[in-house]
Image (cartoon, rainbow, N blue to C red; front, side, top):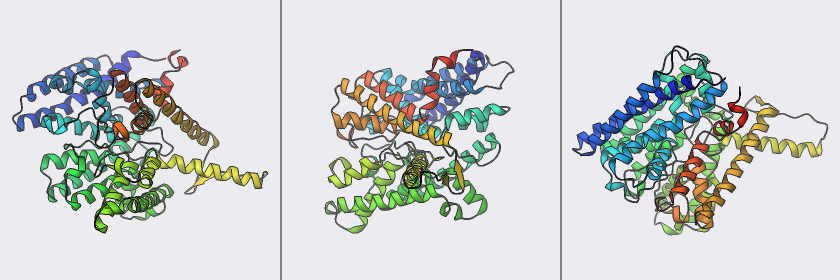
Length: 481
């Protein structure tokens, strides 16, 4: 049985959090003396009022079932995106709701695709909100909700699993609420360290905070039209690279490394080792592909590492226009664009944990051709994965490919060419940001029709929630008694 009042009550509390977060944008507008402060206050006021009123529909009961958990997660992200669009609409910088919704969904899902051609013309308060949406979505809106709300009980477990449906969720304690708190604490601490380092290397406070939001969330929104290419300092670019790599790692590993004061947890983790190997290998190949375009060894290596880490972690920061690179270097970018980082990280994409499990399963099938009577199991780091879970991952991979095929066909209908349409779908579903062609690293999505923007917004949500929570709600049986 689905109880609408209970669901609306939870959604109201989520909207309330979004409204309170909006007030920080008003604070920056006030600090910089911008007229947008009143528009921000109006947007925040409407959001807080709506959230507060909706919260009253939840009377006493707070325990939810699985179906309500899926509904709260899916509708929570959708509702947050609708209300999060208000600052864009009220500012007048988005000519339509489709633009505002696209930009907001792109922020919350940490995609980083943008409809703005000149972000430097935007008010500081709006740039702040744009950056903050990424950081809130990076560790998960529902994870933040779980961390700060009391008396959720078993409901927290249902929402956490629905928002993080991967094969290896970042669970660090038996209690989900404590897990959410610990993960957010680590997220905040590492974020603060990064912001301080960027400030020390020459960024002003505002830019250091906004780019910290973009890197830690693996979102990729920048306050500059040229993204990270604007900052010529090698120290800043290397700092961004390191923290993007950290954000692409399972945050549970960071927790155990800090708690136990050892780096051994990284060395023993197969997914992390695969992640590091791909980054090193891909960066080496890209370096070879772009070496003729640079004078000096360090700029080549820095650019290669930066762009490889940015794409595989689905951040989308740009230090060079890879659309102009050699075919070899571009081929590497195409190859890693959907991989994603580790499970339990802030990255999008398929996730290396899933690819590792599927790879092990494929190896087993090859062995069975030689030894048909042998009994094998998928084992990674002394953990055995059930056939049901492996099948779930295989079906997820199938759904992922189908989303790409259907989405690309939809982009063709919207008059995009093959390269632009395919890369737009891949980059939005993978929560990467920039693609190739008309949606390349130096371009934007503003020219698309409203219909195309809504389709790509849906793909962003499908990618961030990893398809299943949204798919489940489309099944008629989900709504039956």
